[in-house]
Length: 349
Image (tube, rainbow, N blue to C red; front, top):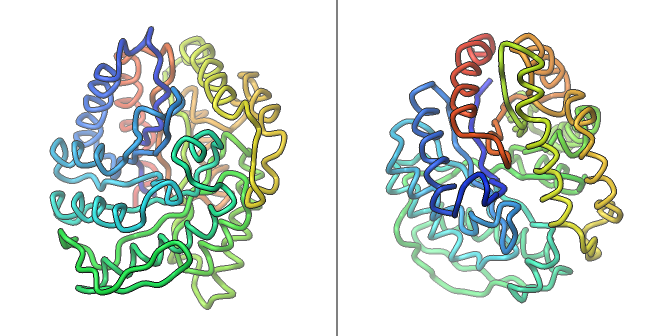
């Protein structure tokens, strides 16, 4: 089992002051994570919203983290491929790979917030097409000194990507929340998968993993050779009541920020099953729903129980979401230390 830190940070003025304060907190957590033995750090992309919008460009953020770490691998979780030019994404990630000595892992998503598409003037109905083409462009430009591509949205000849990445075949992780098509696509192409248990429950994750494993097998691949990466909101304390008291309100506030981000409930043809997501999200404001094995919150014993259920659901890699609105930095750092001491050692190879 590998463990990471994942940042889709909900900015909260009362907690962070300003964006610079948020970044300082993340940098401190990552530097501690490196010392504690966490394997990876991931940065997710969002735009124009407190729900993750303070990291609009994961490669830029990962470049900063590359200078603050020596061992941890650096992942996008993910780059919203349809919202970006494919060649720009390829060269930005290549730059991080070069400056980090080949430590980049590439998580990719389609993005699902309609206002991001509108503001960036991208047709949401083209999300799947643009996503698929961008993957092909990224892999082609990294693998070849010179690469040509002719698709519906990308046309170029003999592009020589600079800088050259250290890795020629990077790890690709496809993120999915509610789209079974994404899990099937990941399996068909031999990519790893990222799932979001808090949004769908571990039972929902199990169904997604089954689809993914079936697609891997159908394409002639062994599921044991591929990882299922899950993100969990994480807070550990030796006393259960203390842990719950610390995070109940921050979790509820986090969900409220999420609900506000999807309030438009507007989707294109490529987002079947997303209709009514606002009500699904608002249901998570009930802390007891989240606490029911959708998060790694509580005592070490409880977290171990949830870890066991996650493993049974097919999860092989976990990243901890630590930043919650209203949760003080000192408590987060204390929780990370306890997690590293009491949780991680049991699951190491």
